[in-house]
Length: 254
Image (tube, rainbow, N blue to C red; front, side, top):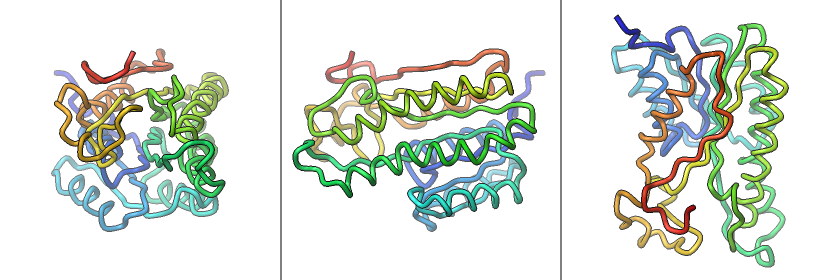
């Protein structure tokens, strides 16, 4: 009989777990049997995710860790708390992200720093914190959520695009440093998703217009979450280095 809980005994840490793709990924990983810790700023929304997992009857455990990913001290302490409660993190999903739209001329340094802190610096801090435990556990999987905006620069999205381009290099470095320890690093490049951000494109960032986009122009986050869970349970001897996934009719891509 096929194992319907292939991630049983694994511990997943998912950022952005209060909504959107992060929440969907946490639910998908828990559905595959992993214990899950979810990180985001909204304590109430995080607790809703945890309650849904703990109430599933699958025997998995879930904990909420509300924090600001831009705070380095909080990030390190959070990973320690997670590992004390659930065990070594063997799956890390960096799904949290933020954006400060604006041209390079208009965006200020504080906005630029906020995007870099959440989209890039937090990924570095979390990977740094979980690497030792993954090595001791004999391996692990890091899945970083990039964007098609990390493949091609867009006007009025310089900070966001720059953070996602840089995430490509960081993910490749993590893969190179981890492979001898059984640690895999994968970068997902999702296109437009039907999340609270709206299904915006470089030519259309209006939320109301985006919300009305046909289903085949924006991905349900559950579809991408299922892919994340599949990557986490894929054969240990292989790694999906980079995966681009877009809606069938996404504007302007490829």
